[in-house]
Image 1 (cartoon, rainbow, N blue to C red):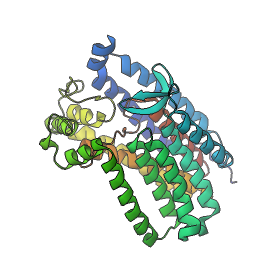
Image 2: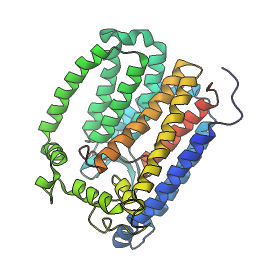
Image 3: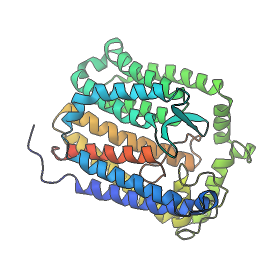
Length: 366
């Protein structure tokens, strides 16, 4: 292993902290009225986001100083632990139900979401497997099917909660890693057809998914029902204009846009900070993606390269899905916007994941 650099990637650290700072400000702006109404505390969500951010930053800097090869040694154990947690969350009395999904384990308001941590555990395991069996990945039976088979088992367990959004991000990230590893495009085409059939089955099996697809195609066909969130999100984007209505001046957060501090925080940001604010955030995410790819390309070994590309791929997929939903380009999935949306497990996971990439950057030749 080559000697580490004196410092990790400074640009990635600065961009991450900038996104996190913007997120904390926007969580307060988007949730102050809701917090005052529900908990008699305008800072209720902001204070908790600060707590999660503090834990996440501590985890990021701590993990940044742990040799990334450590995760190769523990990858199988971490994956097994996450599978056990996915089983535990389905047990009544252990798993907590929120928003119609049994996805949390914890006590009271403080809880963790095992499916979020499964994403990182799967990335770590696939990075180890692909680095050791890269030649096999060109084989459908010996490489691609066993690899994606494990991913689909985890996806199936997540869907039992159900949590389509998190499962979709995990599958999408895994496909990116397998593709980068050298899997044949012809194999992907066949697997994609099977995946489309399975997706159709999932949609048909649950009426609310059909409504989501229908509302995505024509939200105004049911403006007070399945299309409500998308329409209200578009109403946030429109008035923002070039410079926005001003920080704290959003109208849609006053009971029109459900849970504005989570999935639709980008809509509130666009309404208050306008096109300029939205573009600035997208530029920051683009910088994060650029640095992540450079680190992956310069990693001294295949494990580090696959691990970095998996993590930055996960971030990129979540950003694309979340903003796609907010702008009406995709169905509502429940995916949070990394570093900006309110949420304990997702924020802590993202910051910890960045810590892993930062450690790889200390070895990376770029």
